[in-house]
Length: 525
Image (cartoon, rainbow, N blue to C red; front, top):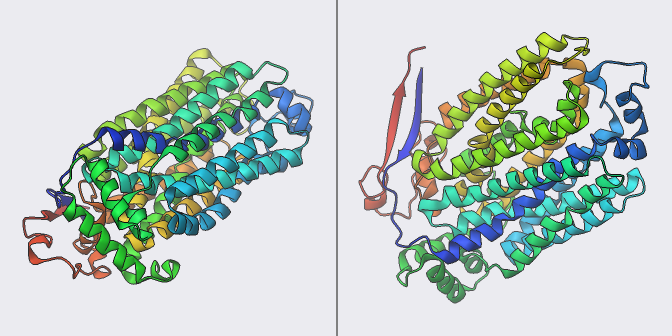
């Protein structure tokens, strides 16, 4: 079986350095990930708190306390109202991402970020003072609107500000801040679990990352790409000189202007993105977030305390196990930041997929052997419990240095300027659609499939790893405005994407200057 990829050796080399300004700017912008990560971590923690369940979801609380006739632990959290509380946020984020695309293009990336932080702050206040389920849902919807704006604008901002040689690492700081948010939420849940109003503190403290994001966004400059797009060329050139640390930015600036002029010819980006020349980018903007959710990672992350309680851990022990997996998630993302611009995207995708597959099969076997289909394990040996946590940690590590950060990096760097905001909206929308779906169906699937749930997600890991091997070209080291050349030289995608007409012969792939070569890989079936 033949597989093929595009390996960039020496892309177009714009002059410039990793300046302190661009580093600090990208770190501040990436704080948008805190609000997303905090919510992922906090929701699973509070729904494992007995006092929270007793007030808002008494049916689930009675099952958890053994007051219900059913003793099957797989089905304890199977409640439509409870899953609506968890998943409503992702539906709101889906709706917001479409509005955010137009705001981002017309008003700049920074404005979208400020709007996102403000909506998130309002949602945290409503949730912290919630008196009934309706207030909880309204708060979750506001949080979701904020996350939709932030997730649409932040990855694009980072990709446009970063020097192309460091684009992968700086963009992945967004995923790192998501993991920090998850870890912070898990720690807070652990310490608040036994307090009378601990759940209010956990939900209300979402205001902290919201305020950090708002203040940071207000202090940020707009990207040169966005300034050019809105007709502010002089400001854009000055900004480009500042973030590159040199005065000679003419070559990069001219390419940005050309890209902007091309983008202005596109009156309807949503129609343009459907054109054949954008087929590969659109395919990956839809399939990468789909596969990212069907790795099963969010089952672990926002249901971690519930999942650990289901497999026999006590309330406090389940929250501590969630802290451990959150720490592994954070540290593994640091590994990805360190190596993504050295080893590339393809290799991380393939290694991470293989690692997750092995661990999912092992976890399914371990849980199935102890729980069977009855869901009644009896006493749970400490060694067994630790082994399950260890396997889940290895699985989380595989995700955190591959599909986690790359799921945000790759879609944000592959689109041309004229459809970049629309493309990122599609990426966020698909991500939120399937995050919503997974959150909505997880309790039912756990009840019905039991340990087979992990086998269900492992099937998708196999498919997505094969898909990356066959169809994804390496994008490491390619300037963001030169990305079309990569697709035009791929063995499959070149039938849709012709070589750009606006480059001279010296810059065409294979000429030596751009240095993009086709790498053929042969493998016997």
